[in-house]
Length: 187
Image (tube, rainbow, N blue to C red):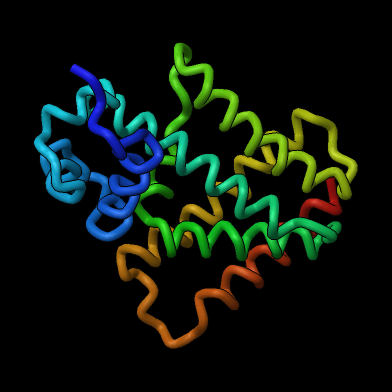
């Protein structure tokens, strides 16, 4: 059976990403995607290897979009300014693309070379952002993990409605990052 004319992987992934961002990743099913695309579910099997294959494509798409957003954010910036730009872009991505963001959190499988390459590209972007602080590679990896964890904590708690106090969440993020970066200079 040949693929439907006009239906391709980018179209499928973008439609699935819209569902994920609007309704959550659990709502991305072959049936909901087929309905959104105006096709029958079996037609999707011409393009994706089931729901697992679709989610793998979504994870890859999410990593690429996140890396692109962070790359744009750091252009022409150094040091603390670069780190603040990364944090702001990361949070914007998590807020704007909550479904895709959730998929960027998973480590790639050993057999998924394309996902591994995309994850490595994102890691290198973050490690290079830390070059200003003159850390060795191993320390940089630990710092990237901490940076990612701190931002994920804010993104996750905010998404769950956990920040009920009137103080600005963005101001909290900036203050915590300033503290984090002050600690980096002590290494």
